[in-house]
Amino acid sequence: MKVVKTVQEFRDQRKNLSNPLGFVPTMGFLHEGHLSLVRAAHRECRSVAVSIFVNPTQFGPNEDFEAYPRDMDADLEKLEGEQVDIVLTPDKDDLYPAGFQTWVEVESLTQPLEGIVRPGHFRGVTTVVAKFFNIVQPDRAYFGQKDAQQAAVLRRMAADLNFPLEVITCPTLREPDGLAMSSRNTYLNPEQRKAAAVLYRSLNEARLAFEKGEKNANSLRQLVKNIIAGEPLARLDYVSCADLVTLQELDKIERQALLSMAVFIGKTRLIDNVILG
Image (cartoon, rainbow, N blue to C red):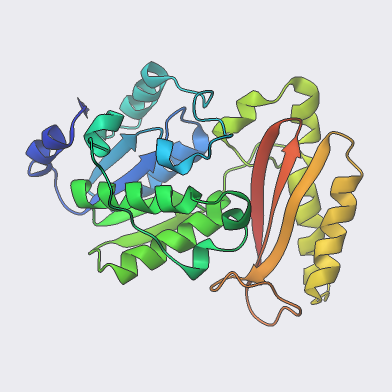
């Protein structure tokens, strides 16, 4: 496994990678969710590249950029075990040189949900991922369903900008109690960690209600709200029941929908979702 630290080093190595090339962009502190993306890339591609970069431009001024968990040595050991071909670990100045002023923005898909509560977040995501697509030149790029809006935004960006690649969304990996795997789970103390299971429990109850015939989106939102309200350590940020493609809020579910949420457990903000239909 080669580890390269600069864009130029990666470009020098790209010609040695067999196609198709699968790419998994990450912010590090890797867990089984990330590694499941690497394994999916291995199944479908001859070579696999991973990036590790905590992207400052997708964090707001009051968010956790400085505190975001990092463990490069452990990450590289895990990727070595997964037989990744190459890992790119760039510095901020390599991706955002002095005088940087060019941004990539997807419009309507970034406005609801996370876009409301994290203004500027998706501009940072789309810009850095567009840069990585340009640097890595992958045939397929792999993202997790837990960040469903992000995946939708990146699919739109790739199509709109004619990137010659396929954006692939892989299922969310969960802990035994249903909590979606996330690097931010490490912020939770034992009591909070136990309480965090309420996210998936509420989503699953709403999914069961949908499967039994409930198609009223507001009823499903209210069901989630009621379950979250029953957990003293949880504070709901938002719950959404939106069209899976447009991410616009629904009154009645007539085709596939995304039931998603953001919840604070203590000071830690967690997101999760399920697809209905």
